[in-house]
Image: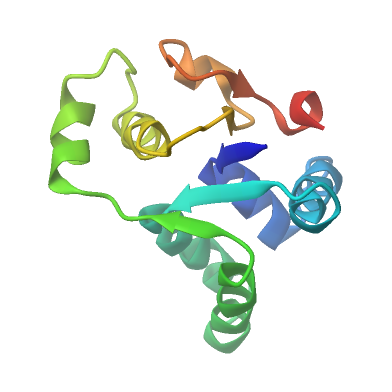
Length: 133
């Protein structure tokens, strides 16, 4: 399965946010056990780092990001994606950018987020972590 992971799921994992962390862990465990390919955007990584560093410290945050990057594929945000997000039906700009990144992945099966309503106009199936597991 090929999935794009929204930043809120990554932050749940990094900050061990209850009650969401367990499903975030299970999602990423499927990289090995189910041979899933997981993607996110480059700006999701920097956003997740920001929250992790505020909750812990710079050294821990960088170590966590480095380890995480060994398991996930990164989609760079392009100018075209940023422009397309401005005219998207997806109301929240950040989510529209995430959608543009997801749409660039060949063979994508879905977007995983805790905020499905934010992707109301997605042409890609959208799942919560519980639904995809």
